[in-house]
Length: 331
Image (cartoon, rainbow, N blue to C red):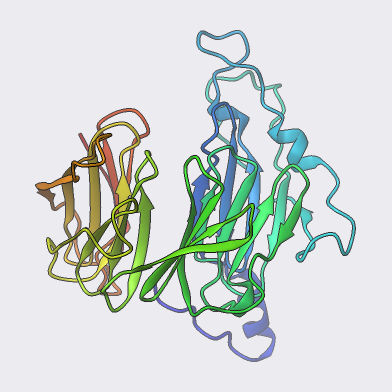
């Protein structure tokens, strides 16, 4: 996306700067079942909002117990000094208006928890259990990666020194591990022992994105030098296979949660879908086969292509969004 223009000087410029909305860099729903928290990186802040309208109304077929997310968002923040970042409460200027068939008199909270950062937050990654959120600020130095605990409303800084520009971070789906990708390597940390477990050498010039297989033993990264790289974490710290299905930089990669599918999105306007079969037998290596190239986007005003892709958690559906301002669903 283009950088925002500098505000003009004088009263007119001041009013323009105050009215200009901050860019939304990333949205991420809490993955835990029955949770309705949405995390949004808006400029240099992360907003946590409860969206109970996403669940069936009380008494409706398929309704579940109302989660405590609204209470968590409205609870007092941690005392000063208990967190590396002081959280606060905010009321968005435009509260959510989706009611999903609920009665008009059912109140919807517009209160949000705000977690301010020093610079723009470019990536969000939830822990599978939903109580921790990892944020990535590529230009944040030692605070490029921060861990936020929702139930206690505190933030932690896991690294005392910068290990290079951080491009992405994510939690292991079942183990207490954190994966941190810099420009050329991926570091795997044990969160309990607070120690480095291994370094993965990517053999690419600039990592753009990262995704871990639901089984937790395989990892893929996308790179700006047109490649998708697959790692078998049990096999080696070096790539198992590099896939060259794109002619321009890869912006995003994603795994399906239940099906043997993964995908990559690129500035060449294509979304490539692959078959990726992994086996419980350690003597059998993963089978990777390109399946289908999807092209529905056009070049955006900034000259960029497809910016993100994501699978539906249950259905064999794939979503993509591009710099052209369009979101597409493939079935």
